[in-house]
Amino acid sequence: MASATIRVAATPLVRYVLRRADDALILGHRLSEWCGHAPIMEEEMALANMGLDLIGQARALYTYAGEVEAEGHDEDALAYLRNERDYLNLLLVEQPNGDFAATMLRQFLYAAYADPFWRAMMASTDPTLAAIAAKAEKELAYHLRHSAEWVLRLGDGTAESHARIADALTALWPFTGELFANDAEEAALVSVGIAVDPESLRAIWQSTVSETLLAATLSGPASGWMQAGGRNGVHSEHFGHLLSELQYVQRLIPSAVW
Amino acid sequence: MNTRCQQAWTAAATVCDPEIPVLTIADLGVLRDIREDGETIEVVITPTYSGCPAMNMIALEIELALDRAGITPAKVVTVLSPAWTTDWMTEEGRQKLSDYGIAPPSRATGRRALFSVDTVACPRCGSTQTVRIAEFGSTSCKALWRCEACREPFDYFKCH
Image 1: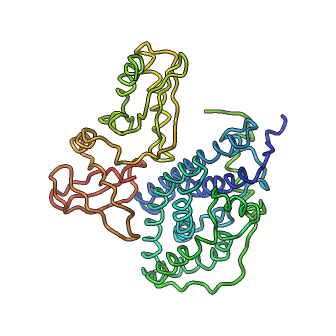
Image 2: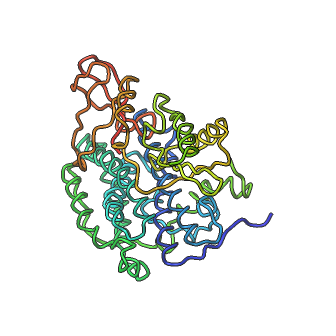
Image 3: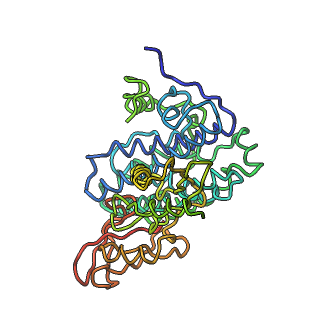
């Protein structure tokens, strides 16, 4: 059977929307991997709820990217039928779940960025992005609060929980530089008021993260080497494995619908 | 709104949230408008939470309700802007929720601080001596709380 892979006509706006859609889809997918494995029932529901919020945001963003592209690609085609190098998510969100501490810290580092990102996006001159932002901003506020409470509880908990979240911090920190990467293509969208200047989010992210880490008795890593690549489709070794799960049904039975 | 649109509104307004069957989509503020595009009746709805799985079901139920009322052709149109908020829930809807045992959402009062605590009244006994058990409950829109006065757990419809 012919490959179902699609090619996306990637204008700067399409790529901009796809980057955010891919962040939401991939992090939502990672959270869905916890289904049936969470340490307690309340966290089972929390992880599933946060995953659902993110996948809902991804659906709205993919639908919009498809409308802007105007090549007949719907949300499912964009979510399932691209190759690895065509996904533009942050490296942070594709990192494996690890233990519960690593998952919650990844959620916290992302939410501390995405919450102010969507709040700023509510002022976008693009009405669809502003409308999606108005919903996502409220949802991310819950994710931020929930994950921050866990960072606090684990960091300021037992020697074991502290050691685990400290390890997670060391492992995930090099992927946080990409959150604020400047990009010439996005700068043009920033200048016309469609996109959010990533640099404008850095101070609020740093303040949320450093206050929470301090309260959690964790030392923030010294700034050092930062790994980037996801925004341009260059992924970590984990991503291909993730996609093979995510795309399995569509690759096996192209065009299958519920 | 002309007579046909009003009939369509009445029919669409009977559709209930599949997860909270005491609330209609009009109570929730999800039903936004009825308009005509030529012969076609368009029912305009807005999603609640981005990922709420009830929205597909609601759209299907609207089509069925209009079909039963003989209002055809009809289609459901989803708009994102302005974004739905729990402040759009009607007073009647809030009362129905409370009678059903779900604490209605607090009125939005600006953003929460990172570790702030909400005050929620127990829908059974009215006490505000309540504690949050879990921020994320059985559906996207609910959190799980417990009343320290009457000792009963209850759902709280979260602010959005």
